[in-house]
Amino acid sequence: AFKLSGYHPCHRGFRSASIFMSQSKEVDLHTITSKVKVFKTSDDVGVGLCREIVEIAKSSISLQNAFYIAVPGGSVLKLLAGLSKFKADLDWSKVHLFYVNHKCVSNTDPTSTYFKSKGYFLNELEIKAFSIITEEMTSETSGHSSIAHSYQRTIKSVVPEQNHLPIFDYMLLGMGKDGHIGSLYPNRKEPLVTDVQSVVLPVDKKSPASVTLSLPVMNNARNVRIVLMGEDKGEAALKGLLRKVSSAAEFPVCGVDHLKAAWFVDQPCAAALVDKIDTLEYVN
Image (tube, rainbow, N blue to C red; front, side, top):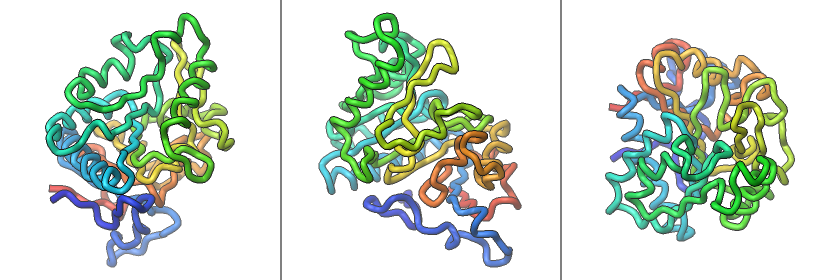
């Protein structure tokens, strides 16, 4: 069975990663603390990720009759197509799915994360997916600030709160080479937002604009997973894990709670981590 050492569905993440470190090397515990699971291929990352999501969802549903998850777009979203294989293993009607970030485009726009997720897995499963933009409010009729406010109201009305913030059971993040997570990009103000009242932030970096969950919301989740795949992401993974940049403004992923987060990477990505990161755990 696929099991993560140190995990408990009621706990927020993993125990200190020092238990996973090699006894033969001296390691600076203040430098490396995140757990890193290494899978052979990107497909294997997807299988492991989907299996873990289902296992944690089962535990959450048994405890609170619901499972709250936030997912990103891009290649990580595509991995979740594997959830359809677990259709008979879970009461998917108790799963509440939100998006970490989303372009301010119509739900019917083929480039929207909502539209893509329907094709990947939503149409197969009875998941309560809370789309960013409703038919009544599109990017043509309302600015992205209004869309952010509307999405925030939806989240706060559905997701339980802890520490005055929504508490998701599972926060799934991808990461760019520049360290961005969600739509929190380097050298901008959004990664520095700490106000608990700002759950969803408007981001006008690109066109169309987007909305994103704030860093405090990401860190408030019970389980945080960062997924990276490919050789070209190796150096970025190393930079994030070693936290060579202390400021989230410069490299946003460095603002993620390293004691809570676990990283899922494939072997091409992990090649840059060998002999530098002692918290690698290879998954057969």
